Length: 119
Image (cartoon, rainbow, N blue to C red; front, side, top):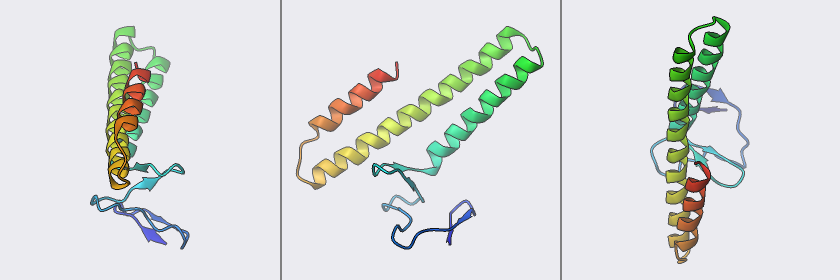
């Protein structure tokens, strides 16, 4: 069992220890090796709550303006989560490239592609 910093208790496999990477937080590792931290998960949970709120507002027949304001806030929060992830991606890839003695050109190009894809 692993007790996470937020108090959540989950079973873990002995062969896959909890990633920390020395950043001072407990992360969540994806299959491709990316590290997703608590901040981005909380951001996405907040967006999820905002969208649920928008749906509730629509069921309550609230004004279009109110719904649009809330949708705009949700989109802004989602955009910030995307930018946060891209920043982490750049840091992880560039750090990995530098540790392996490689250039960071490919990582920069991929980050630019990701930024362009979000718009």
